[in-house]
Image (cartoon, helix red, strand yellow):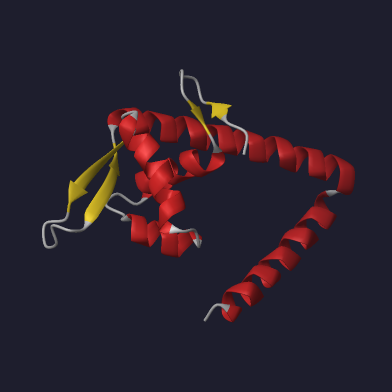
Length: 128
């Protein structure tokens, strides 16, 4: 994946910045929970988290009831990046939606979203 700047000196790939945003939205999440929710290996997520910890965007704390459990939290610097990333995603989605409506029409786009929603539901049912 191409790395992207979000207004500071660091470059982040899609996995790293989405991991950061997820941790911001779910403080105290563990690597195991991330891997389960995202269907990624713990190793892949550990690498992304390690970079985020090393450069000061994510912090680790041991769980109160289980000292082996490592809980993840964003730092103030990480919170700032998460906010910028979310704003970037909203702008990107808005631009993409505008382009699709201009090329296909609003009705076609709504129909496409309905089909995708049903497909997603079917996909999720297969996981259970």
